[in-house]
Image 1 (cartoon, helix red, strand yellow):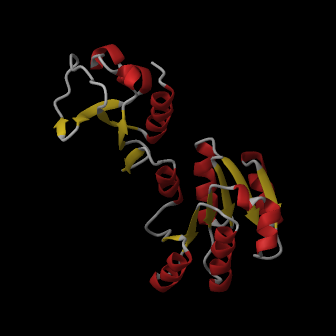
Image 2 (cartoon, rainbow, N blue to C red; image 1 turned 180 degrees about the vertical axis):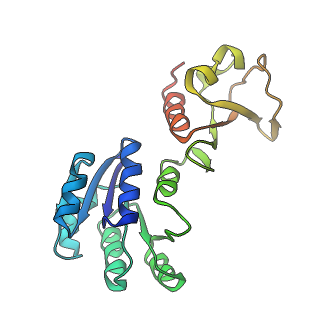
Length: 220
């Protein structure tokens, strides 16, 4: 589905929404403020004005169809606990919720949500980590430089680094190749990639995410 919900369009929620939009994700935006919803409407799939943090309101907004929901408010402890709880009950796989302190975070985690501190975890950084999936390990250092480790598609086996030329074609650099328990960090143009290997790449997050799709689809 690859659908995201953002509940609460304060500073943190807006930062998350903007980053999701930059990555081309489908977004449902929910807030109690019609003016905020009007501002973000051009950048999201749908907007929903709600009067209460109820399970029924979330269900009507389509939250149950989301893979991931980010709850972007924490000032009202009651509502900031009820919102992620309702999302989880609607079957959302991953719920990330802004937290105000450690105690609040513990409550959220007991509910099954992931607690984040906006002071430490910027909205954009959280989104960059969200785009990682089960077959991709990513270390996000910044939007301009991150590292991934990914199982190479067999279609690339038997070709050299020079022949593949991923740096020019896809703006990613091979910095290591792993075969079983062996890791080769001496990358030369004539290095041949073997079937079943795992490659470690560096580059901008957008380039790495684009390459992940290319590798998955087996495109040259």
